[in-house]
Amino acid sequence: MHPPPLRHRREDIPILAEYFLENHEKDIHLSPEAIQVLLVSPWPGNIRALRNIMESAAVMAEDGNILPKNLTGLAIGASEHDEEMALDEGVKLAEKREGVEGLIIIAALTKTGGVQVRAAEILGIKERSLWHRIRKYEIDVKSLKMHG
Image 1 (cartoon, rainbow, N blue to C red):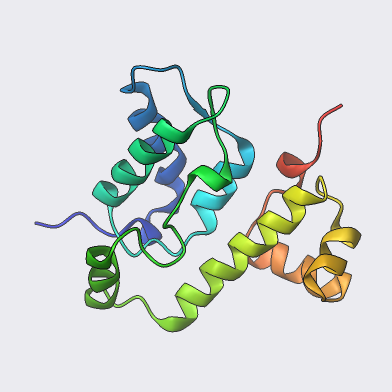
Image 2 (image 1 turned 135 degrees about the horizontal axis):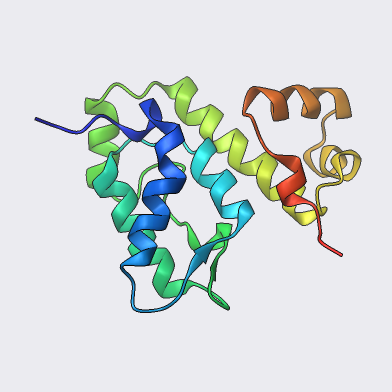
């Protein structure tokens, strides 16, 4: 029996990711931005794919935090095997495109400290269009705002 792909169980992703980090020798946590990236990614794979990504990210973690740039390979699959699996599991082009779009929006919001007007300018879209996409992908802008 194969575990279901993570895209069908998004609510489990942060819990599973933290679980895999607990088993690491360093004290490492997910940044709020990294959690957002995990949630909007298209997830062609299952729990094994998440475990592999978390293990790689833990090695690259900075100051005990996993940042979005540490989460490589999420948008299109971490390896050729994952890309093949994505096709086998029926990940449609639209799902992959939406995952990539969500990652780009999070990157722009992170860069601007959560300021949507500036993020929309960077992305070359209207603020209203950005707002609709933020709602569509359920991006938590508050977690991307600069603290202090």
